[in-house]
Image (cartoon, rainbow, N blue to C red):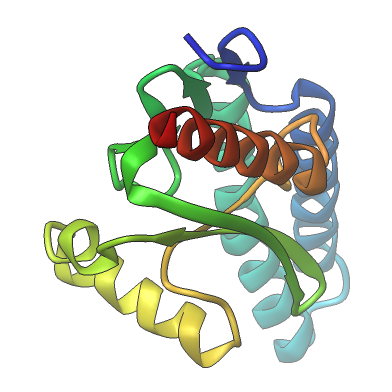
Length: 172
């Protein structure tokens, strides 16, 4: 059990994903409108691109609305982040947590005792994403809470507090 709090289970924000779905459907409709209007090649191309891209975005948003799996779980075993695909990160591996801002978003960075242990088990595409994170100024082990109904700072504070209390109790 967490030293400070009960287990924290974070799910997707249905309100945010509903907004994404409505916006995607609206832009898809704009693409249809462009294709059915006067037949200029640029309009047809732009309309088709809009239909394909925003239609795909609408499918993703609908999928996110229909699935209700926890995205982040913080409990007595450690931190689980579905989007990072790292599995459960035990408390004894976590040294620190910070909120990093960049490229218009906030992410929670976890400083781990041995990050290579977690990264090496990932597939090549996921390792490529981690390299991109580093190029854009993020740390290798980080996750976004943008699609959740929670502030990044609040989650980072819970993690930092838990890590420090576990260290203190281990010393005693």
